[in-house]
Length: 486
Ligand SMILES: NC(=O)C1=CN([C@@H]2O[C@H](COP(=O)(O)OP(=O)(O)OC[C@H]3O[C@@H](n4cnc5c(N)ncnc54)[C@H](O)[C@@H]3O)[C@@H](O)[C@H]2O)C=CC1
Ligand SMILES: O=C(O)/C=C/C=C(\O)C(=O)O
Image (cartoon, rainbow, N blue to C red; front, side, top):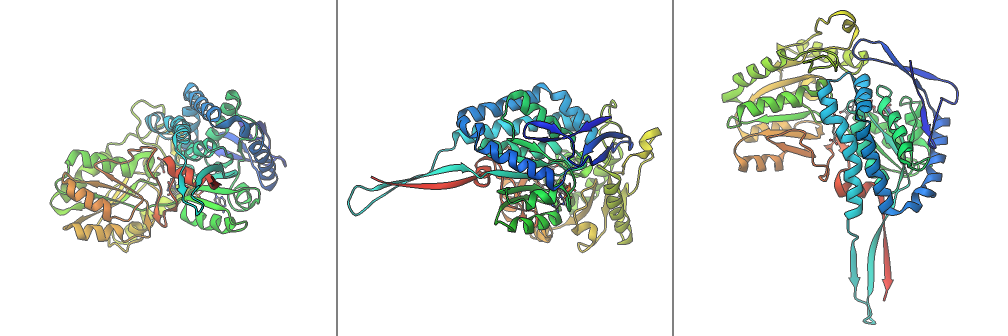
């Protein structure tokens, strides 16, 4: 039985009071690890370690050596690729190709890209005229913000954690990570990587545990934490924002979504079906950028629904390592209950269930896992709960539309504004729609095509702030203006 410990001040440590919780496989509920359960005491120890590191060897390294070290972290993740793949597969049960091709490589890229951004961003400077004619020179210095609290969800654990840890460390901060209680393994593994590479003790810390009344809340309330970056549910973001108000700490939030996919009749049909299929069902629909509302122009509506249905009915359920398996379980039994409650709500609200709507029959031990069928509905009004609320499961509602104005109004009539995917061959329309839709990220004839230099985040209730490229530096550094009288 794997025992997973906290990583504080460069060493693995058990829970201070001996508390542990269980991690069970989403595939079949087998116990795969026991995890140290942290609280206020561990968070306090981690904050002290992180604060000491902030002013110690880490600060003395300088930008070049620090960034070289982050490249070494990326190389070590790549060297231990199989270990990370195994950890993510064990935690999430997702197919091997998703983890090995999409998620783990991003773990390495998140360190390299931000190390390079930090080294290459120029400083802002202004010359000022003064009455004596000699002038003054202003220039801005970027200073690390301090100790950063990083609170992560379970749906793409390594990718989403390193997306924050990479830029935070590149900017010279130290971090305390609170991974999701559902997916603790890769954050622990990254501690081993940090030690192998020689990252100074206390720069990267991990405290495992839960949210309210546990490690998560303790991290957000600790006055030694200078800023909090969080990915997760909008409701949790509200609680964290309230905690961060104490001490006036900055927050960066990537929250929920109820993303619309727009398919116009002139789109490359096969590409659109494939793109919407991936966006709605990849990772068993547990992707914040995923599409749960699909709007299809009327002339191709019936054909599109039939094609998407065929794709759903061809998925191959199985363990990550099973040959041909391309569809995994939901993360937990608790999450399955939530998703199935929406499947029931859709029927109660009068949906036509095009496909799915229940639990697949699984052989042997897999029958214990958190499996659900990919599901498509049609026929619901926009006011239906499953059309308005984030489900975070493998499901979507498809509705026909007749005009561009109509589909824009439908897409924008939601409290979230994270992402969209637009399918059309008419480039003028693509630019128009991408400009009019209320989201942080708009993909045209693509989905989840990520350039890490671009701004990433959500509008409306999908988040606060943008990370990515230089935008990450805005959050992870303080700008100090120096004015020199010449
Ligand atoms: N916008 C984006 O980029 C992304 C957003 N998400 C969102 O994440 C959600 C799914 O992830 P979950 O792990 O279920 O989210 P969650 O909000 O339940 O939990 C996320 C993390 O917050 C911690 N937490 C919970 N309550 C807390 C509190 N009061 N104080 C401090 N920490 C607390 C949890 O322990 C966990 O580590 C979905 O709503 C999804 O849309 C997920 C991925 C990307
Ligand atoms: O690419 C990113 O930075 C964020 C990706 C988000 C997910 O992978 C997700 O929510 O699953």
